[in-house]
Length: 202
Image 1 (cartoon, rainbow, N blue to C red):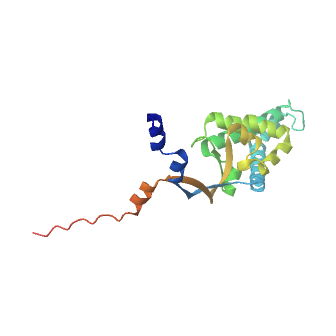
Image 2 (cartoon, one colour):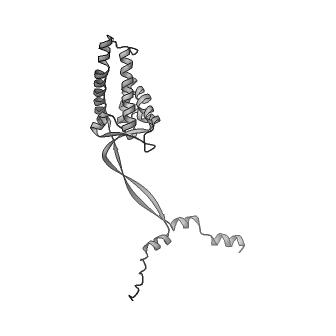
Image 3 (cartoon, helix red, strand yellow):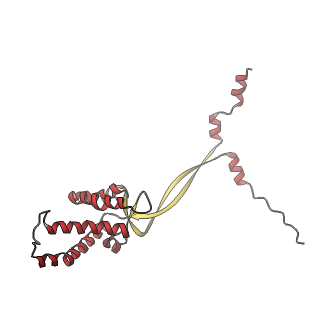
């Protein structure tokens, strides 16, 4: 028998090593905040629309009446349209950045959260509440994506990597994790703990 034969016979095979290992599935349960669906977010948006209309009616319209400016022009470049748009986007940007929720979301117990970090950054809020919301307002049917996309994301959520969650509602998600154990590990775990010798009291 040559040296090569001796080495080949003495080395354990890969299949034998795999058979000697036991794969034990471990089920892990994680609790996370439930994402908000289409209709609850729709009603929060309706409430926000009423709030913005009230702000414009209280703070802007009286100035236009005093200055005798027209409030009936509907073109996008009309003064009332520009001021209303500025207030609209400022409301969503500032409320989301500093509170994580608008008044409509507060009323229904909703909050905007980031999917990539713990705290909302200015870049997240601007992408979500300005650029993303502008696109969603131009193409209104895109709001239906909230009911379709994972984590109930709208197109503005998708751009900013955010979503809207219920503040106090949690759901359980189970994940299966495989744990590989060798016979030595199993025997070690099965051993009874050694009893400590009790010292006689002096």
